[in-house]
Image 1: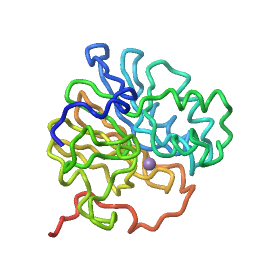
Image 2: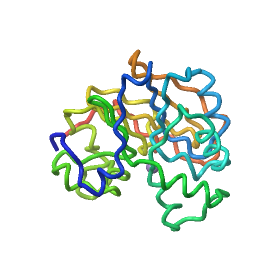
Image 3: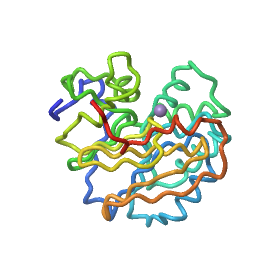
Image 4: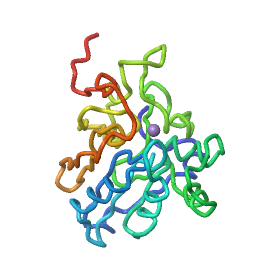
Length: 232
Ligand SMILES: [Mn+2]
């Protein structure tokens, strides 16, 4: 995959931003209903009205307060989210709405699947570098993680993708944030008792707050260490 446009149907879900409209942009990993953790992270970031915060999706499900997270992101004009696979499950009626009302679900449906500016792309899951970008579906970009033939384990897509853009993503639960030249992984498992992580795009650094507690159990070995050597 060498840059360029996604399929037309997916491009319709792509919101292109002008970075000059903002003094800074932060990108935040998967919140999964952890409203109080998200509030603490936002207190740390303390974004000015001229600074934008983009969430990588999966605001909802698994954690205790999906409606509270939706209210929080809807409450400020400088907070924006894309749709993750968990928003999609609710939009498509494959999972119960977790206390969200019809207006909240309409709002989820209104969110883009991709946000980009300059050479930066934010999407929930990943891309397959071996396939043309135009062939990627919405489900692909929301769910891609492993490129292994059995769909499990290494290599993960970001270990093979070499640009041209830098892609910020969530979805894959990591034991620490991954910061590479062409990919930045931000799901540090806050709903599993890990952390909620933001990336400060101006200062090129991550900012994390610890989870309040584990709302779902997950074995430590199921937090992937993205820096573990990738033995071939
Ligand atoms: Mn996900």
